[in-house]
Image (cartoon, rainbow, N blue to C red; front, side, top):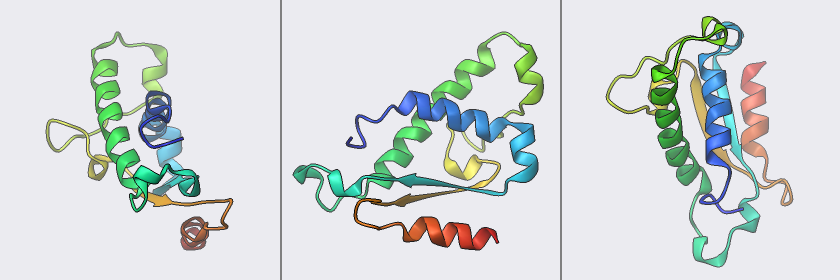
Amino acid sequence: RTPECFPAKEIASFMLDLLTSTAMLKHCTSMLVLCNKTDALPDDMAGVSPKIKIKQRLEKEIDTLRKTRAESLDDIGNTLRMELEIAGDAFKWTDAPVDVEFADASVNLAETQAATAFLARLQ
């Protein structure tokens, strides 16, 4: 898939759940978003870093979801969640309560150095 056609809303929803989960944040200080299949990009995207496009798209989707959830009725699930503190009007990755790193990868081409480096830093 190209960065434009990945399921951004579903991924953003999952990431917002992680970024606001009190249980997860109690044990997590950093997160890696590994953008796989960089070897399968169409020719018109040659030289483009998918992580940049994906990062920007997820920022927009998380911001929309964050606003929608804030306007919805309180429910039991919200007691296990914290609000994201936003420095400006819209969510940016610098607002995340943990360090979020994006990296391009291709498992098919064994280009997974970003993942192994991230895991090594956790030890």
